[in-house]
Amino acid sequence: MTELTVRFSVILPTLNEAARLPVVLDSIARQRYPRECVEVLIADGGSTDETVAIAQSFGAKVFHNPMRRAEPGAGMLLEIATGDVAIVTAADNRFGDEHVLARLALPFADLRITGAFPAVVSTREDGATARYINAFTDPFNHFVYGGAASPASYHRTYRVKRREPGYVVYDFINGPLPLIALAQAFAVRLPYAKPAGTDEDDVAPVEALILQGCEIAFVPEAHVEHHTVSGIGDALAKFGPRIRKRITDAEQPVWHRLEAADPMRRFRAYLWPFYGATCVVPAAAAVYGWARDGRREWLYHPFVSAAFAFEFWKQLLLVGFERVRGRNRSVTS
Image 1 (spheres, rainbow, N blue to C red):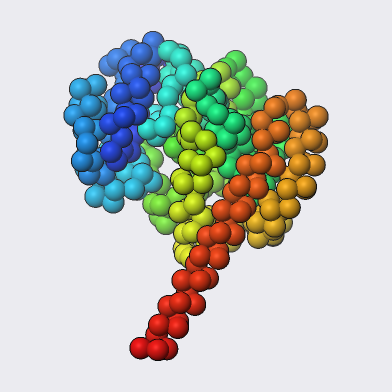
Image 2: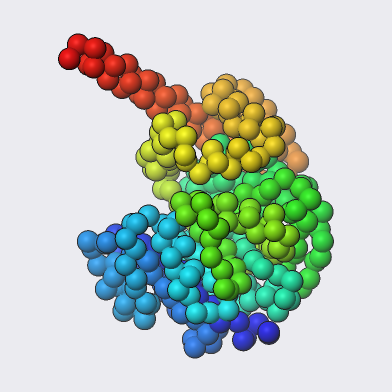
């Protein structure tokens, strides 16, 4: 299989994405790749805006997603896709240039490769918070996963198994499980179905591939722009409900992953709210990280960590207050 014979199925879950979808689909349409080798599949969760019409205008195939949420929608399309390789992406992602598909195709000429993922990058449109998340992920996962959190630190964390023109294969199986999400344009060889119990998870399916001994390639020159948040306020509005769910719902995917993780990773998960709120310790980590890596995104670390940590404590207090009030009401009724 050469790079030009790889047939791609680009998978994109949507729900009321009329504002962002045209740019995403245009970035796919502009790829210098044979059109007959690319299908775009949309799992729409019941949009009430022009999302479906826009998708169809670009020639995408639209399927109804009865679960509405992105993760099960992506899982549904993975079983429908007809290509050789599926790429799972999201409405806040854009292909960075016209060669992303060609570059992601390269590793799949090697039949040992099961999956591949691009570099997530920022542009001038992105502010400090988005740049931080794109470089390292959100501050909770950055702290919990450490050097396994993003490709920025993989070279320090994993042995290189093979370095080929256009991609590198890390020895993930003999190190800590990395944080690689399907929705960040992860490419997987078809046929493929998400493992049982991972319908709502974006990370566990990649972990399962690694634990099965599958090789995953990192393609550093395939750039995907991730325009995730517009600022710290937008980030807290987006992540606040997630933090609340993690506090109130022990069935959240992150807790299932941590159950199977090593004890130190679980310890760091419980330590993080205190770490982030200290401000001083994240500031020291930022100075060290900046000196070591030379990445200015480290300078945002104490501020983003503090904001997320205080959001956690706010949500924890709100949940506690609501539970006390609920108990008082049940006693007086």
